[in-house]
Image 1: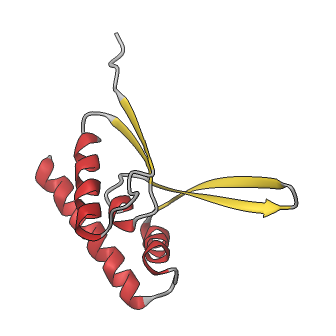
Image 2 (image 1 turned 135 degrees about the horizontal axis):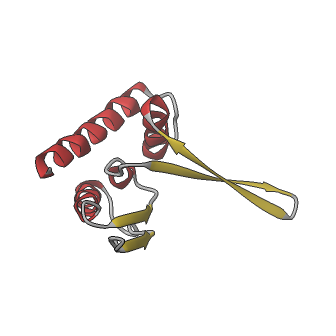
Length: 114
């Protein structure tokens, strides 16, 4: 038979939190994702950094129609997106340092858990 994997969807899981709490939420969602498919809608880089796959949804409103696009980001593009989430400035050097630190924390946590 086919193995069934539970799927959890968390929308706006970051409402009203930030900083250290957001890192812990990201960590716990990452741990849940070891045994389930987890989809998270978040605006916090501290949560997004823990994702195995980072997808950006963009909206473009022209006239009366809103069009959405979806793109997976990785490598330098993912760092740039995390920086944008952190500071609103895509090319911030200090933001890139912070984004890299978040990604390293998430990677270390993943290694520790496997």
